[in-house]
Image (cartoon, rainbow, N blue to C red; front, top):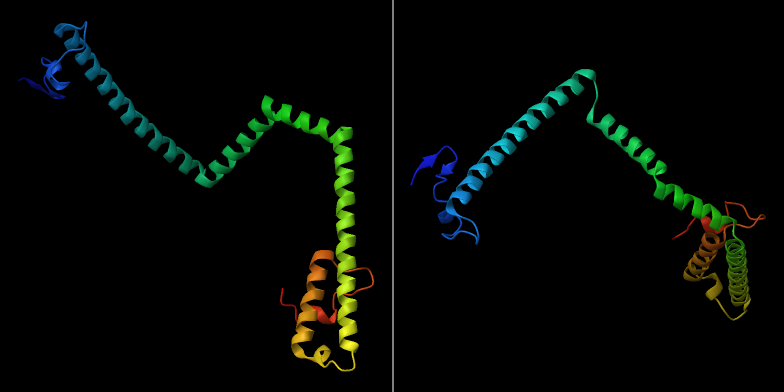
Length: 185
């Protein structure tokens, strides 16, 4: 078997691929293809080496110009975002969203959700007031000492705090309410 700088000789292409030639291919054609394949692989290797050398050279030029990898990333992101904004898909989607925002169905849905939010807020406020009133009644009971116990006060503070987190403060309440000082949430 002959050898060359590329490995096994090209005189036995059938042996390298399992000993048989593909149908309709003569041994001479297989050898020609094998030689061409070796040439193409050599060219690919040469191109890889040239590319690596060019990349090193470009990196050195960028370094000398003061272009950092971070500034390159920033520039690439800016360019990419600009390209996205100029793309047909983005422009079409943006236009469609604007049309949806102006549609009657969207406006009705927005109104309905707003009303639902207001009603939910009112319901939470009503529940919170009922709970607060009930705790007030429990604290006022003459036979009950539970209204003054530390655990009752702690629970009451937690309920009030949760109300503030869900509802926010009403106009008459300050940010320095007694419950905000020992807030567990």
